Length: 252
Image (cartoon, rainbow, N blue to C red; front, side):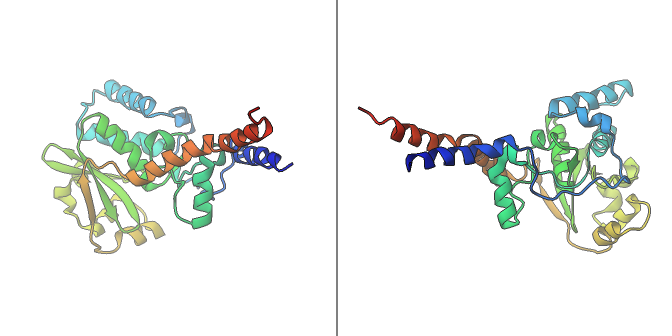
C-alpha cells in the first residue's frame, strides 16, 4: 500500500497542469483606457511586430524614426489594458503558488512572449514588450523609473523620446523629447490631460528619476526562476511515478 503513495503524489503534482486558473487576483478592465479586443489575436512578438510594420508601411513611416517608436507605443497601448499578468496554474503552477505564499511577484510575467498571451499587462510588462520591438529594430532604449511608474525612452538621433504604452500620454514628438521636458517629473503631467489620482501620485513630485542602462534586458533573475519552475511544473510529477514503478515492479 505504501508504494501507492508515490502514485498519488505523481497525480497531485500533475493535476495543476490541467487547471487553467489564475490564483493571483488581477485588475479587471475599467473601460476607460485604450483597449482593442481585435488585437488580442497578436499573441507573439513576431505577430505584433509585423502588425506595427504594416501600419508603418501604409503610412510611409521610417523604421527608427520617432513616429515609428510612437506607433509601436500606440499599438501596445491598444493591445493591453492595465494590470499585472500572471502565470496561471496550467502554465506554471510552482511560480503561481510561490507568489501566493510569499506575496512576491514571482509569477508576474517578465518575458514578452509570455506577456502577449494575456490581454492585461502592467506598466513594466507593456514596456518589456515595447523594449523587445525596439531591440529587434535596432533602436536604442533605456528604462526610466518614475514615482510608482515604469516607462522608457528611445534614442532617436541625438535625443531621447519618452514612451509610455501603459498610461497612454497625449503629447507631441517635440514635447516628449528629453531636451524639452528635461527630466522634470512634474512637467510630465502635461502629457496626461485630466487630473486624477494616478497623475497626482506619479507626477506631482520632484523625485529622482531612475535611469536604466542602455538596451537593458530587465528581470533576468526572475526569467531564470520562471523558466526553471516552468520546467519543474511540467516534469516534477515524473519522479514519484518512476519511484512507484520501481517499487511496484522490483527487479527480479
